[in-house]
Picture 1 (cartoon, rainbow, N blue to C red):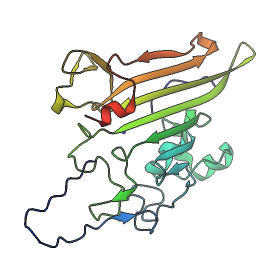
Picture 2 (cartoon, rainbow, N blue to C red; picture 1 turned 90 degrees about the vertical axis):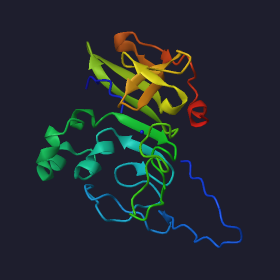
Picture 3 (cartoon, rainbow, N blue to C red; picture 1 turned 45 degrees about the vertical axis):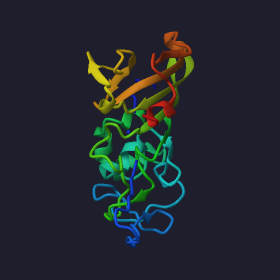
Picture 4 (cartoon, one colour; picture 1 turned 180 degrees about the horizontal axis):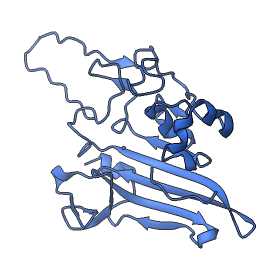
Length: 233
């Protein structure tokens, strides 16, 4: 199958203002204690999230996904995990054929993220994993995500293997980062990277695909391609 490139994102300050006051210990729900569940729209809605990899390929405790590109979206759209048997899966779940990610089910995907992107605990007692905890949105949160895809397709009777890697970070408008012509820049006008999903920027891309004569680094930010740089704002 010839693939299409798709780039498939907490600071809590505690202060004691009254001397000798005894503060109530904050409630933190954890995966390890079975206190965090899948969201209401998920196929596994209400079930406790496990500490290891689930059927889809998510390891929320370890901030990682490893599995089918399609499966990274299926659960959140109310569909069970695809197990590789197209005929049986579509017979039981005919709506899957119309899902935009279905054509990419054979693409292998590995994602990693930090706690600001998706935490592995719940601080606000809704029993769901926190996102950008301590911030109203992702902006300035320091969230980052990496995305590594690989697969193969046929071209003129030859099997072409390909891989793609990208780093996605969260710029900091509060520190002067801004968008111009769909590109993020820092306060000094240096290019951070292309806008993706509004609040985020692509800071590093690597692609290897002999079928389109693409090899090695395709983009690296003028500011920094390091994930830690953007969490240290």
